[in-house]
Length: 201
Image 1 (spheres, one colour):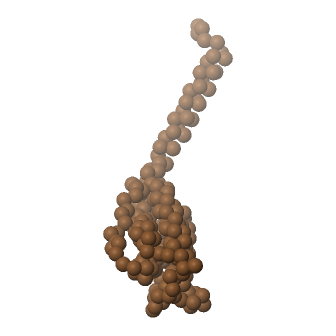
Image 2: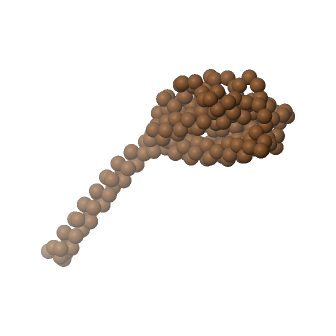
Image 3: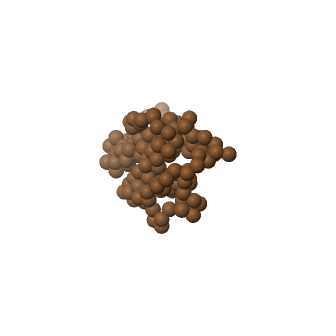
């Protein structure tokens, strides 16, 4: 004769049932972490995105350094423009860093070494060259990224660098109308041929 109360036996059966369900849920959760759970480490698509984003990060770090190095050579309104562009580069660096981590990757980008010598025109020419290269790179890579958040970020950064180029054209002497880029500019529009006034005032 069993000494177990019927309710106690029923309670143990329900407890075993819950334990089995929890074990099954845990197994599904662990199994689902597979290649997507570890992001760029084990997912080739996210790994490719992380690599592309690191290349973009290196460009943005280089541009940030270019504005930082060139800022002492700028005067008047161009000094304010340079400060604003340098600050925006910092925001782009932060956004790309978060995006790389978002796909499970690690940041390993480094800025390219820049020549710190030159005058105001050299600073603007270098910035124009780097901004054009960044725009062209984002136009190229955006449709090839595999995950939606990096694609959106790349498109946004392409637009941002296109806007920077308009301002730099004016800094290099272009009129307001001449600073407007060609339709569907992908970073190919050359800088104005001559430098204008330093924007002092």
